[in-house]
Length: 329
Image 1 (cartoon, rainbow, N blue to C red):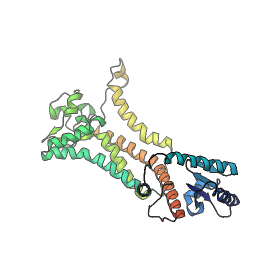
Image 2 (cartoon, rainbow, N blue to C red; image 1 turned 60 degrees about the vertical axis):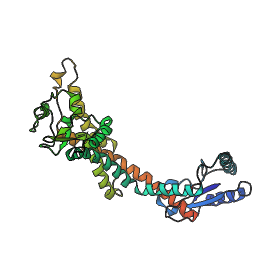
Image 3 (cartoon, rainbow, N blue to C red; image 1 turned 120 degrees about the vertical axis):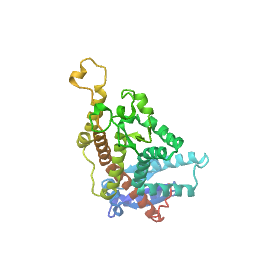
């Protein structure tokens, strides 16, 4: 059974806890791993006013604690381990080492993993029109089908690739672009038809995500790349700023568009029917993506930094080294 003691230099209570554990060694055998919190700033910030801290199994004791408290924690942890020993071992020691190596690797490279996942997610919608253009219609339809539960895929609110225009909005949007109805001859109020319409060689083929979703995840990806260079200096934005710049613009643009088409008597006098433009969809979606990264990623980095510090400190204390070959206690 492994017991971790977090301590610091010149700590009388730490010396007492170490002596208590030494006294209990004969009665409750355990492997003591002592971690000096002064070796890692994250550990020092976390445990500065709490040492000595003893972790054994699911139990954590912070100073001050009595001899009885410590003994009860060790006995409870031992009983829990004995109960587990009655069952087949879930993982071997080598499997546990590999698992911890993987956890430490992910803690170090979480941002690259996040950015890669977002890149794939926002990149595949462009693969669909590319495949259509190259004549691989069946493979393109697979992508459209996979993304169909995730987006409305309305053609008049989507980007088009390999065509005369980058988009064909409804005439209600009031842009200088050829409208969807003019380009296709379809009824612009036929949402089912607009969802099913993929494009043709002249107009091009639509992306599998709409303009706003492309902007959201594109914003997340680009700001995630920027965060790789700013992660040590960037602080989370306050919630009010996230709401004003991230939530409010997209809510107003999308919300007023949705509400304006509701069959409510007298609504048109207050809010005329409107259709957002490709520019507004991109702007509000991009702001939403960037603001979410600015709010969340600094907290994620802080959490993983603490995880890296804890694992590295335990590896160092256990004499394993800092290569990631950790041992699960």
